[in-house]
Image (cartoon, rainbow, N blue to C red; front, side, top):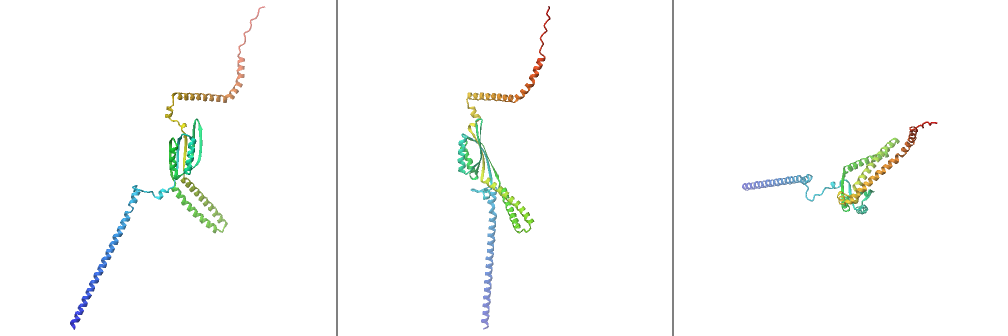
Length: 313
């Protein structure tokens, strides 16, 4: 009996030891798996951080000027407010024909003439035009001028960036509008006449500043939308060059030289006649005074006839 009880206790003790050993092993495996999970999480996080640190490298390269293939400027660079003005001098075969062609181009590119004038004299004809062209078609319009001209001796384009000024105006406008709203609120709450008059005066100044800012912004918007082209047209016959003059015949050059000499003589005679005509009243006045004096002196110094000898009776 005692032996059986002893065996049972030994079996229970062994069973308990087995359960304890298996429980410790399971806990160790869980700790190892948890540690591995934490290690994987740390590795993954470190990889993400390294990738985030390496990501700005292309942007830094682009900022340094090393732009990849197919680089497109950002929207902020494309939307800058630029005002373009150009000056062009063209030599043309016919002033009238070129004006018609320019009118057709203005219709095509939706531009308009701001001012125009023509001048003719000494065998020359010149035309002056100031045109306004939408900025989107400005460069294409400039390229069309090559087709109309015999030669373009002068061509210049200037650009002015007004983005900073426009942003500053926008900020000032918002600030003034906020002041206007507060003044209107104070005006509604004012109960004294003096306060109402003072608020009205301040409100008038603020509204005047708002209108001035809006006017400047409208001016900038208009000049950004439309570029200005100052165009000078010269007929080709009025722009003879040294090479063309050298090709003329000797007789033609001699004839032109003689004409120039004759014109110089005529100009001299005309000038002399004009000077004499201007001095004629003075000469007449001098003659009225000088002629009587001259006659008097001549009469006084006139030699007397010799006395006749006495006759003998």
